[in-house]
Length: 234
Ligand SMILES: Nc1ncnc2c1ncn2[C@@H]1O[C@H](COP(=O)(O)OP(=O)(O)O)[C@@H](O)[C@H]1O
Ligand SMILES: [Mg+2]
Image (tube, rainbow, N blue to C red; front, top):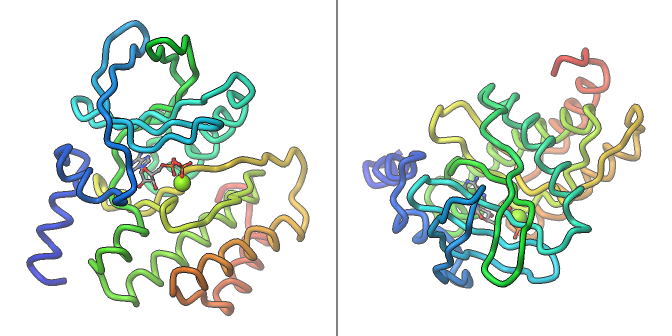
């Protein structure tokens, strides 16, 4: 990795400045300042993305935290499932599942909302690709590893239904791996059947085509077998 790239990664520690984070976000982000009351405490945030019918995504530079706010009551359950799935994902990558939790947020004029609160984990695969920060070999390796995590999560009953590279983050703080975020979210309350694995696999194949990533079918087939054969522990 060149010095420039190395610097870049240092810049992306969990202590990354707000400018550092904003520089990485897509050009379409809103970047509007908004004060949210989180458990009664006023927190100055940047509104990064707002899909008014679903979720608002906010970044809190003071605490280096992200808040994903459900824009309607009906989405609370989905957010809670997403939280559980992310905890599992964090267990795989760094063993710190408690960093993610549901909190209550008040947005001026909009009342109380549920939000998923989590630290800034690090750069997304999307940003690595977009800014050409690492080689294709490295982005492919990250993507294929993310697939292994997704398979392990399916085994736990979590369907990773949107494996676009924006939902695959590198955990810079510990350097220990990958965090899958943004489970849109289906929870299967039974032993997953083959069609669940196939569904997630199809998602990865589709996204690999969209983003010029090489999805390794051989690894995919092997990892499916491994996951199916392995103990509940993974
Ligand atoms: N905890 C986090 N750490 C680092 N980046 C994050 C985090 N949460 C969200 N992001 C960034 O914000 C983007 C949008 O968040 P996401 O939860 O995927 O919302 P959406 O449902 O709008 O896709 C992600 O692609 C990622 O770049
Ligand atoms: Mg997303």
